[in-house]
Image (cartoon, rainbow, N blue to C red):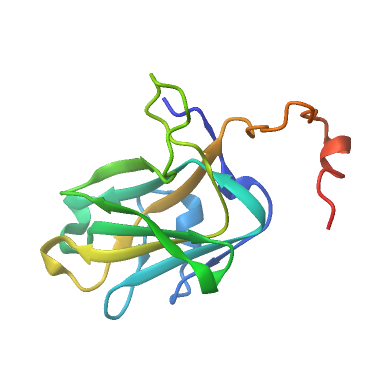
Length: 174
């Protein structure tokens, strides 16, 4: 069970790829897919309006239908802008089916019994499809969801976690 909130729905963000049918990511419908075109690697870049806590990434793949179009190696990059992206995670998969989830954080959350990582605070998150099954050239991705922590972690004990919409409207000063 995932104890997280979907960052995709947390306000405006920009999703960039080199192809126009990017709407298929948002539907997460297993019957539709985003297809890349051209040589690898393929890039999917999410730009958020404010710094977002990212806990996990979930990607919907179907090896049974897509065969050589199925990604087998993903690289995850994060940063404050396109100019300073750093690779934070490499994920290898064999014949993935369904939702594949993994932490994007790099530090343990501090609890010795927990396997979860601390959320990563980013403005830009980039998923690089580095390799496909049977060295396929193009790729199919049926869904992509960015998950944040269930509640934002407050590091300052004096900070009051206001929850109402009226308080949230004035939470950040620009």
